[in-house]
Image (cartoon, rainbow, N blue to C red; front, side, top):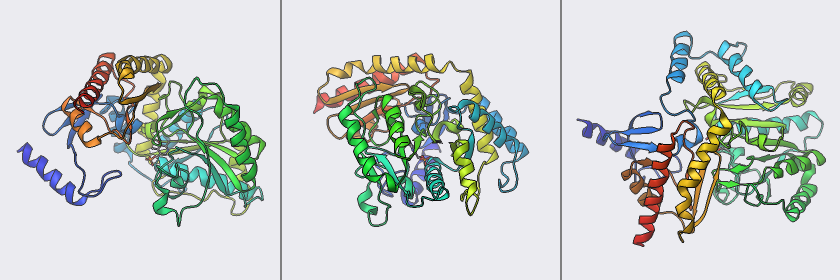
Length: 433
Ligand SMILES: *Cc1c(COP(=O)(O)O)cnc(C)c1O
């Protein structure tokens, strides 16, 4: 019975459904999930997989959390959705209160968006409309870092790394942005003044046409899982101030504790002009993004014709998403976030330490609840993934990277299991070659 059901799902899926970054019908490995709880995925065949991905950074409290479930069920029974045009509601205000309290000082004007990518679009529109209102409409391009990832919609894509972001396919129609070399890798490395001079030069040459500089603070995620010194944030923000650029921090991946502080900008004490949130915002229950900015930008947007900020999604401030996000922030505020994440980082670095002497491994790095193994060569993803699933763990490597970002509630025993199995699979695979 179950086997038939599984086959039915896979057959339909294979013929009709795209998956992220996939060729329709060509996905080699596809694992039907029946349910998920805590840090485990239950497959249709009954196998339990220890999840190392938290569904791409987002399920920070684990799956099927009783408090989040209850918040959603309560909200369903009162209202699942009402338009936000001309109406407001408690979940939106409750969530807003909590976000304003949590966010760096001054970032207290909020725009709820549909997803991370849309939050980036909204932030970019805000920056352009800001300069339009200031009488400088020519400031309409963006500086972005190489190796960046900011999402898959049009303008978000335009500020992703031009190589890994696949600009070649869309180059005829993508807006052309200014790319700044990525900061040198390493949380603790000394500041490279030559690098800073290079950045200053590029900004100096282009500032007249630049609305903003957008960065992922401290950790560049999907563009390469690179970690850099927080002091670069202070430096980049300084350059933005000097040359009249807004500074946008995309905390969609890093926000809500992932790097060991509530927000990655907290490592540098930086307060950007605009911050983008997503992923972990809802505890990974559903899609939602948020853009936060300051009083100056908010009031400037009102100043000039049309006198309104020109964006308004149908499902803006969806009450279900707001309610579950508010509940997620409540749970988060009860964690001792710094020691909690430090313990995960310690478990990851101890667990991965045997890999440092393996020649197929280029680099092992951890930052908060993120662990990255960079291989010398492209990972044989279908084969590695098959072996990981066989060992009872769920990962999704890409390029040369095998990486984990588990739910914050993962136990030390589960971390040991996860890292141990990763080390085992890499060693066995490498040994056979
Ligand atoms: C995932 C991600 C996005 C895009 O978010 P979606 O919800 O997938 O649209 C944008 N920026 C960063 C840094 C991300 O990690």
